[in-house]
Image (cartoon, rainbow, N blue to C red; front, side, top):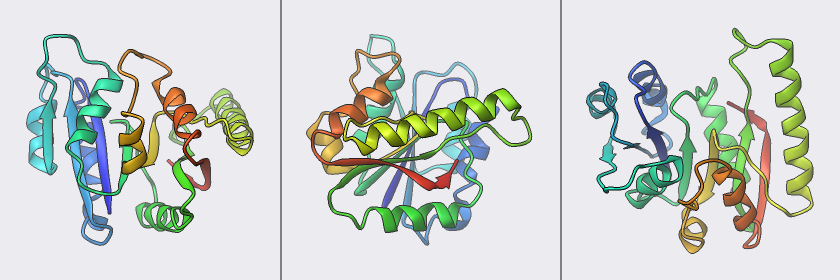
Length: 198
């Protein structure tokens, strides 16, 4: 049902925690976990190979960026819903996360959604709280009016529509997340899943 796509570059300190968080719900929600690596020079690839279904390494001559990494992972995905997840994103309640996504995607007009993204509460300060709350408000308003807006830390997209727009724009080294949702919003509805936090 879900392909979890994690782009990496030198993430040896985080990647095992990020992948292993799915262990208890992997079978229940039919997850495949794909790590798309941008030629890490640390132990990211070796660690990822221990815990994940697929590890793909960018092997072209040009340098990789986040857009290319995400597209590389998506090219190997087999499920209908693609969950693009940054290597440092932790989901506190995975069962609720996936149950909410299943419910949200019952709406056939929905092409993509994104949860609310916050800093780890143990490390969050007042400034973090204010900034992320403001971004959530702006994201909701922009999506409500049909323009598509989402941050890239966690984006969930129907595979068909992702392929229809040829994925992330690989010319972008920043802003690729917003661009993706803007283009997807021309094909259907995009939302912020306000009842889901990562």
